[in-house]
Image 1 (cartoon, helix red, strand yellow):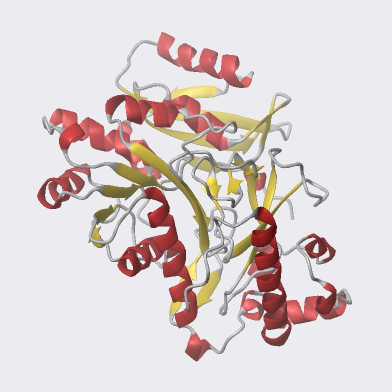
Image 2: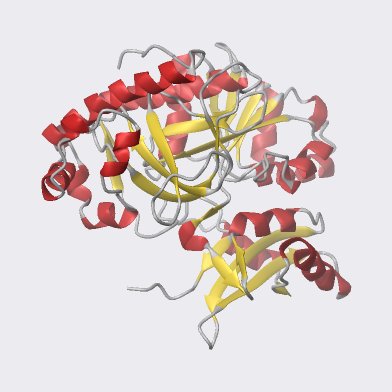
Length: 434
């Protein structure tokens, strides 16, 4: 794939016109190559030649994860011999689905991550430690590697977990940047303090943080971010991506949401009636991929609740930004009349340094309403500690879930399940409606 002109310093009107031209090309590609979307256009009598603007996109029905699960093969737009890499979604919200990437799709993926790394200040020749897996058909680890390779940076492919191994590599090879799940940084700090490692002077300058939000809905530092930076004053950059998008929203030095890569993706933020919400209001992120050959998506509903920020950014880019994921539609919890999402609960728990590990479990009780149990491991023996947690929940979220202690080893087995590519800290045991 030829590197496209980067428009992020152009006016918002110029960026919008550029995206609309790319959208028209993508619609023609879908009509010619996508069995699924070709049929959708015919069934709904959609003449794609009349879809000229981003506003016109609203005339096309959305695509859901259920659609891809039911018709996975029909989303492929190329012959299987042109697929170079197969990735699967993590299955967080249902059965995993398969995505195939062509050679050009892999180039697009590398270009996306190269721009993300440039946004956080990675330069050619820098060394970056990759603390996430590349195996198990996980797109993220592959994307990071390809992006760093394209940028000309060195990669230390250590993988996830094992603080001792991570520190051994850091102390030997002196990387400037890490790519890590932010809560794992607390484990890194704990191990360093136990082993008398001078971690503040180990040469790490910044971390690209994946999988967990660093900011709250107002773009202020979360409790997790505050806890990390109190101990280790690093620059913590948030990045948000998914297999379906094949693109990332990465924070700049202003830390005010992840910038869109204008030539790779179009986003909408919609309400329950699939109508656009005002900028800055929460809604479901709906994405349209640009330039994808293997499995392109049109108006795909991610299930993630986010906010779009369009005010000028201090960094000088004119692209809009996507705020942190505040929750997932399918993970919404109605508890005693209050609507909750797991990220808010996770962040409150991180505020207690006495908690070593935690798992949130949601189920239906005997009368069919949601029930929350929080399992924690802690060396704190006082029974009043559990009441402190409940009181904190009541003060911040207006409800107090049940809190139970569990041995650290038991929660360790749940959180770091070898069959899962991501740490499991939320378990939804509610019966799914047919």
